[in-house]
Structures are given as structure tokens and as C-alpha cells.
Amino acid sequence: MPFSVATWNINSVRLRMSLVERFLREHQPDVLCLQETKCPDDLFPYEAFHALGYAHIAVSGQKGYHGVATISRRPLDGVERKGFCNIVDCRHLSAVVPVGVRRLRIHNFYVPAGGDEPDPAINPKFAHKLGFLEEMKAILADTGDGCSSMLLGDLNIAPLETDVWSHKQLLKVVSHTPVETEGLEFVRHIGGWSDLIRHHITPEQKVFTWWSYRARDWDLSDRGRRLDHIWGSPDLETDLASVTVLREARGWERPSDHVPVIAHFNL
Image 1 (cartoon, one colour):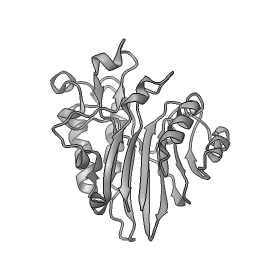
Image 2 (cartoon, helix red, strand yellow):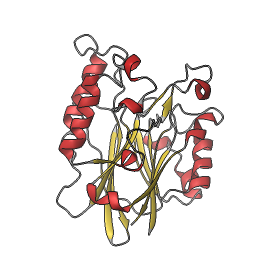
Image 3 (cartoon, rainbow, N blue to C red):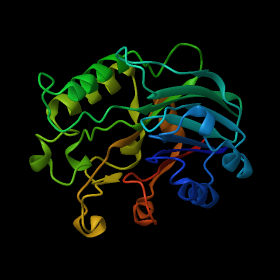
């Protein structure tokens, strides 16, 4: 059974709803996980999604900041919203989706960006990011309930050398510092997760999902980073058919600085 899941940091769902509608019409994923929706739950554009055939929606939002939403053609069961670091913000949402005879738990994450200075002693935002990673270790691929699992979203870290335009120049830049890249890889390993993007696209190839608004010509300079990730429980590796990074979406009118990433499965 063909099945697809997409992740996209939309950078305000109401501001960019026309782009979301275009994406859903053209690519029709079964499930779309959005991050940085910047929208309280009561103002979320439910009707626009319903009109496109996405009847099942779980949201965790707040005004002007953060926020995650999981939009699905299939029922969403067991919806949970987990808090991190004793801070009230909306950065996690999980739900279970039926796929044929299987059940798939999907964790939708928006990891803190961490500010500009990679020193937790002087930058509380960076300290928050490292603390968030520490608590993410509790999110396991195998919870013993028979569900396959996915963890995806804007994790705000580019772990591999080929996940950034210049490894050497970004070693001291937040999102690619060793404490972050090693920390994220440890979260993945201890949780038993497979990096499905890199399972399909070899680590030798550069892959970017984010290009800064500051670039005069983002496409020409191509100074990107892979900040958006799709992880899965190991049993999903054999079912993974392909991964699509929709680079062209960065060139759409009034775009997000992130682009959608889609994982296609035969389940």
C-alpha cells in the first residue's frame, strides 16, 4: 500500500496557507506534519484542510511562536502533546495512524533553534536547546506496543558534514557545532532510530532543506543546511520507497525558508 508522510516548517500557517494548499494539491501526502505554525488552536485554518480532504487534524499551537500540527487523511488516535524543559511552548505532538493492518506512531517535533551564540553559559536559548535534546532521549522508536514509529520535523541541527554548505565554516555556528551534532546523533542512536533521509540518499551527497532569507540569491549561492529530518523505526527501512526534498518550494512566492520533505513507503 503506497503511503507518504511529509514534514515542513511553514513559518506561519495562516500567512502561507496558499503554499500549503498548493503543496497538498500537487503532492497529496497521506500525512503532513507542520512546524512553526505560529497560530493558536482556535484560529487554525481547519476548514481549508478539510476542503482538501484532510479531515483529521491535531494541533498544538500558540500565538506568534512555535507550534506544530499534524494533518492527515486517515484517523489520528492516541494524540499526545509532550512538554520539555519545564517550559510552556508547543514543540511536540504525537499521534497513531492506521496504515493497512499496521499502526504507525508519528512524532512531530520543532526543536529550539538555540540563538546565535553556541555557549550555554551565556546564551539561555542554547542551554534550552541542549536541555531539549537531553530530554528527547526518552522518545524511543520501539515502545513495545507493536507500532512502527517515525520522528520527524525541524530538528534545527545539521548533523553530517554533507548536511551543510561548508563544514569548516559552520563548525562554530549554531546548528552545526559538535555539541549539537553529536548530541542529535546520540539521541537518534539511543532511541533506536534510523535516519530515513540518509538511508535513501547516501551520506556522501549534500542534502539541504533550509536556505536563509538573508541570502540575496539563495539558489545561486546554495548555502543551505539539512535542518529537517525524518527518522523511523528500523522496520520501516525495507518499506521506504523514496525521499523527496522539494527544493523548488523555496522559490515559491513569499516562501518559508524551509522546504517540504516527503517520505514514500510501500506498507
